[in-house]
Image (tube, rainbow, N blue to C red; front, top):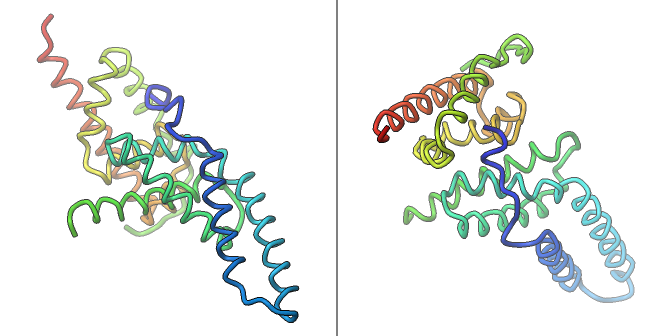
Length: 221
């Protein structure tokens, strides 16, 4: 299941995002007052911007495919997903000063998810946390069941079933099963406790199983 939902190519290039972010730096620098006292500060700002962009390219840009994959599943539309990812990367760059290290992919997934939620609101017209051990609570049984579903059901059927899931179930399935994020990273990205992530995953898997089974029964033999 983790491979069938991956996107292999993007309708835009990473270089396009870099170009947009570079223009942001240029505009910011141009807005700085001129003069002998501010020239040194302006140069320092440019140097800071160059360093920031280089670190952004190294840490965040490698996850462009993952960002598009999540956006595509949440928006259910390739063009909308492209727009969301462009906006998400601009947001990510603007707030990159707040990135404190760690997993850049998980941080970016949170930005993409929030951008998708904003997009959904715009388009509509305007559990207690506990210590968690994934080795104990891992879902090998569920993963095996999903593998069986992929083998038995057509890719189109499974894709339609995933897209039919409510957003809160669809996003955790995509982040866990397609992007392979940890439960902790999903909880951070979705701003919910780990227990909620586990509960949503369990319900999403059950809905997927029921959906695929039902559609398979309706298929002509």
